[in-house]
Amino acid sequence: MATRKVISVGESVLRKKSKPVRDFDEELRQLLDDMKQTMHASDGMGLAAVQVGILRRIIIVEVNNAFIELINPEIIAQKGEDIEKEGCLSVGNFRGRVKRPYQITVKAYDRFGYAFTLTCEKWLARCICHEVDHLNGVLFIDHCLDREQYNKQGGKF
Ligand code: CO
Image (cartoon, rainbow, N blue to C red; front, side):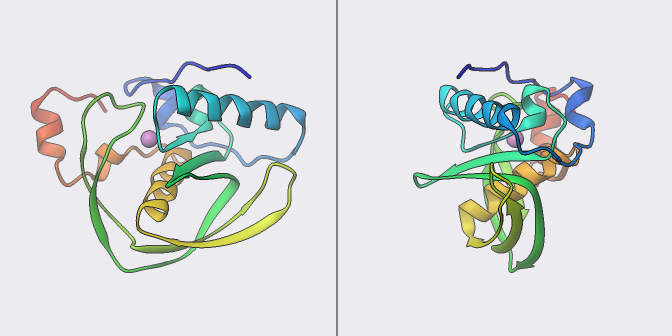
């Protein structure tokens, strides 16, 4: 396992769309292990592969000690609304409010290529939505309710 460098906002790779994973191989599992170590080293709640420079649809999340790996995640249902402050390992210290669904159902694959479906709420749902955004080149500051504050402090996009 190795800690990888987390890419910061302003670098164009963060704005690119990630491609689906096709091979559920050793290389994928190595990347997942490295991502976990990288996320723990930075005290994050989630990480997308693009944040370590790999444009593949791979995310990890950890909320209340529940650690989950999602490959090729797809949000297939969502319900309700929830507003909380978010941050991002690629966006420095800024935290701001983002409106997200309260509950989501996500379909994904595990590291061995087995499909699963997960319905979750509140922070886990928020975290997965945030990471899925990364796979589409979207950052939370793009739809943050406190975007003006971010702009005022000279934030990059
Ligand atoms: Co993020």
